[in-house]
Length: 238
Ligand code: 6PG
Image (tube, rainbow, N blue to C red):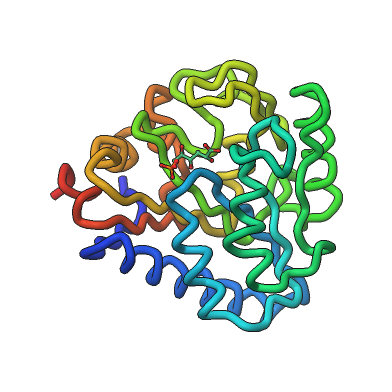
């Protein structure tokens, strides 16, 4: 089985630069054919450097709609909120209008928040096969346990068929989250996984293995999935 396309860079800084260049190229490709493109952004800490690099590479963000791949159910200005990191590192410095930054309502109960965000995504995005809303790009980090977004190993959320799924018991705090579902992530035109550091090396290896719910990253659609990693994160793959 052809796995994801893996790009190995020497350093985390080079990963950020390469990821930002690829995102910029993909957005240009999209906007040649359509006035709007929809990107799901990763949370956590790894993508921050990529977002900073993207701000320096791209001036015109017209038509680029930004969504959250997952979000913790905390206030938007809470230190743990993915929205806060993305606003700080990308949306603010890039001058992306609020009307193009679609953030979930995290003041709701978990399942209601997931359902409401999923409904907004369904209304706003083009429809792909099987009526699944299609993101142009889904950007993902990966956990040391090979979780992606807020889809954790062997979690019931991995089997969700809804657009967005509620998570009550995330092993990575905070426990309450909403996440794009695996079908939506796999229906995207492109997936980009960014991983740096030796601690991610087992997850990178798992992501290239046979699909296994114990390693959610391995359940990504391999076609049109690109992984950009540094040497440290690549040390357990040949
Ligand atoms: C989250 C993220 C999560 C993250 C990984 C990697 O909300 O926690 O979406 O999936 O991407 O846990 O996190 P780091 O980049 O901080 O290692």
